[in-house]
Each structure stands twice: as C-alpha cells, then as structure tokens.
Image 1: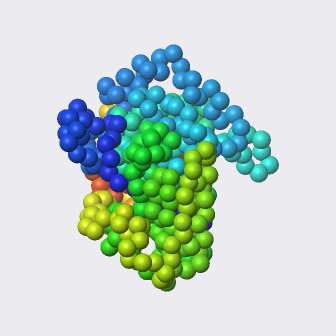
Image 2: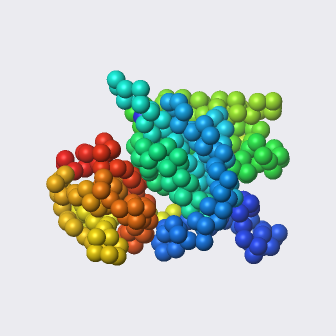
Image 3: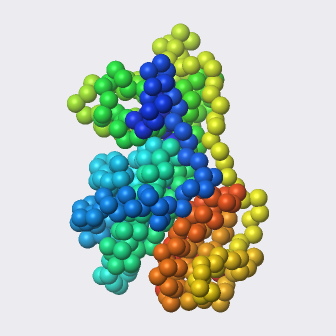
Length: 393
C-alpha cells in the first residue's frame, strides 16, 4: 500500500511570483496561484512555448544521456525550460509548485528487452511554462527511446496506481524545490502541521492548516518547526498512527544531518494547555479552496482522431461498453472511462495524427467536468494493463 503524504507549508513568498506579486510581497505573504485546469490555452504543442523549448534543446538534451540504460526509476525536475536531475534521496518527494518527469525502466519475465513508462507530473501550483515544458520533453524522451515508452500525464492528488507503485510513499511539499529545508536558513523555515489518520491497511497523511481547531483527539499530528519537531498523540489515536508518525519524524531528522534536531513526543492527556505546542498553532481556521472535478456522468466514451478527410477531425464514436473491435489501426482513439483517459495510437496512424494525439486528449479533458484524471498514451501493440481491463469490463 502506497501512502500519499501531503505536506502543505504555510503560504510563503514564491520564487515564481510575477513582478506585481513580488512588489506586493514586500508588505505581506502571497498565496501561490493554483493551476487553472479550465485554462483553454494549455494545448501547447506548436505554440511559442514549444518553439522556445526546441531552441533550448537545439544542441541536444544532456539530461537524457543516461536515461533508460538500466532497470529502475529516474526523475527530473523542470527548471526554466531545462530538465534537471532530481536527487535520488528525494525520490518520492514532489513540490506542488513544480513539474517533473519520471521514467521507469523495466523488463518483462523471460526477456532482457528494456521497456519504459514515462510520466510527467504536474503540481497544482506549477506554472504553465513548466507544465508545457514537461509535456514537450516527455515526447522528446519518448522519441529518444525509439518510441518504446508508454506516455502518462499525472496530476497532483490524482496520480495513477502505476505511478504510486514506484514509491513507498509520495510526499507533496508546498512551494517549489528552492523553498525546501536545505535551501533556507533554519530561522526562516516555515512551520508545517501534518495529520496522520488511519489503520495498518490504509494510512492517510496530509498537511493541514496550522490551526488548533484542526486537532482531533482520535489522531496524531506532527508540527515541524525545522530544528524542533513535535509529535502530538491524541487520546484516542491508534498504535498505527503513532508508529507511522514516529517513523516520519525519524525521516525528517535524518534528512537534516549535521543540524541539532530537537524531537519531542507529546501525549494529549498529560499536557498542560499552556504548552508551547498549542501556542505555535493559529486560532483561526483556513478554508480549503482546492477545487474538485468529478464526472457528472460515469458512462465510458470513445472518440476518434483522424485526418482521413484531409483535415483533422475529432468525433465521438461510442458511449457505453467498448471492446477491441471498436478500434481501427488507421486512426487515434481516445477512451474516457471517467476515471482514466487512454490515448490509443493505431499502427497505421499518420504522423500528424500521432503528433496531435496528446494535445487533443488534453484539450478534451479541459472542456470536461473531470480534467484531473490520469492520461496514458501508447501504441496499438503495447496496450497497458488498465486499458485491457477497461475494454474487457
């Protein structure tokens, strides 16, 4: 079971602020702008952004030099149109203000052939430039690996089961990587409050507003101050919550090697109400402004992308149960199960159809009521396990 951990830091000044925001930040903290999933300007292939990325990559992408050479996971972060290596010790950690590319290289039983899944992951505060660069660079990496990979789009909080399987836990951190503990002075580190709730089978760990009203006596919380870490055990918390929280405290301390870390476990029943822990929490709660997008109709739909008529057309082919015989090797098909989107590339598909497949899939989702679902793009002869399950259901 993969635990997805959301660590949402108290809003701080982002390194990605616009000039106007930077000016305003001189007088107060500014909350990052959440990614607008209804933005119609996200079909970025063929745009000025794509041309900018191509210019930056004119001499070849050095980041791909060792990509896919051996079995395992490799991760890159997008920084100012550039693909940069993500430290191995941070694998599984993602900042919600950034975009990443994740490559999984593997072999199947009885074969030495290297196979690949390449994902681009979008943080909900990642900029449009970063998202577009990650999307374009994913296609570039696919080309570099001779079109063998299956391409995937992952959105924060809505990651596919395949993506989650690469990590023991997924930790979502607030801001961009440049705002992390390693890059700021201890005295400037912004406190974070984490909530642990669940049992042995399923443990949910997420960041919550640093407010006293959020404390529930049935759960466990960690207040991370940087050099001091408190673990608060509610009266009714179970042993699994306490153990998971303790393990996480140890992980935080180990990551801060060379720094004096003060760790303290607090039990609600033995604490005085004047304890410093309570004084470090705010009294007023904060509204959760995260938008949720769920399909109003769960009916599976199949669409065809074709240029057989002389111009590119995108048409609805079918609603309801879909089978293998509904696909045609001459075209691209987009299967929307409302829980995941599959982009099927026929073996006789034209170059234009193939190039536009992910763009049309993305544009389609932006116009839907469920744009945050995972997207997988693959060749006809390399269907994913989830796709096979979807058409067999």
